[in-house]
Length: 259
Image 1 (spheres, rainbow, N blue to C red):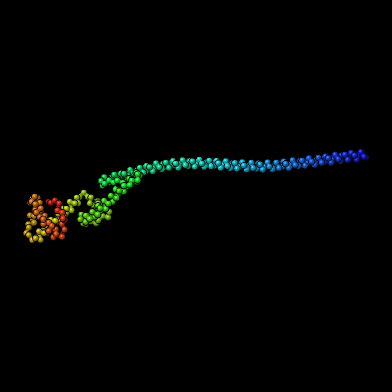
Image 2: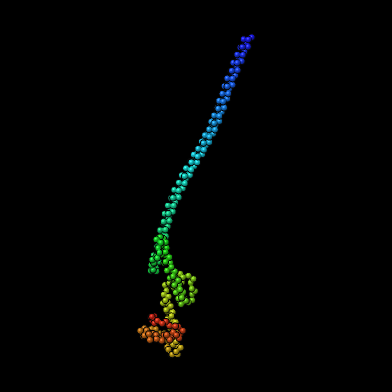
């Protein structure tokens, strides 16, 4: 019996030591499990961080690609804009050359009409602007000439065209005077007709007996004698003009006798 008790005690002691060792190993296993769990959490966090970094890197790569494509598009637009600007500059230069040619042509044509040339006081050394300044000088000269010519023609208009209305524009006024017909000769002949009529009236008023049939027979008139009679009568023309209410000019008459 004692042997059984000893055997049981020994077994108990062995079981207790085994239980203690088992508890120690279980504790070590738990620690290892905890360590593995921590490492697993760390690995998962690292994996998530790596995934986030990879996603961020991919986004940055996509953004870089988009920016690169944008740069290429901007480069293309810049090249197109540069080409368009060069084309515009060429067209502008051609246009300015055409304008300059037209301005010089107009100035040259005006010079041939007016025979008046000009020198610029303050040239700006810009071909187009200087040519425009020349044309402005010619234009000022033309405007002054048109103004003076208009005043003269309007003053003469009632005498040449007594029964017509004055034109509204200078161009129409000038056209009326610029006709194939010699208006000066026509007016001179009209004046001669009036002068003859006035002379007939003066002779009639003097109550002299005149054979008008003989006077009107121009075939019997000798021009040399007729001119000498006119010359002899000139000292009395002022008196006759004064009688008719016309103030004679202070300068001697330069008109030529006409038959």
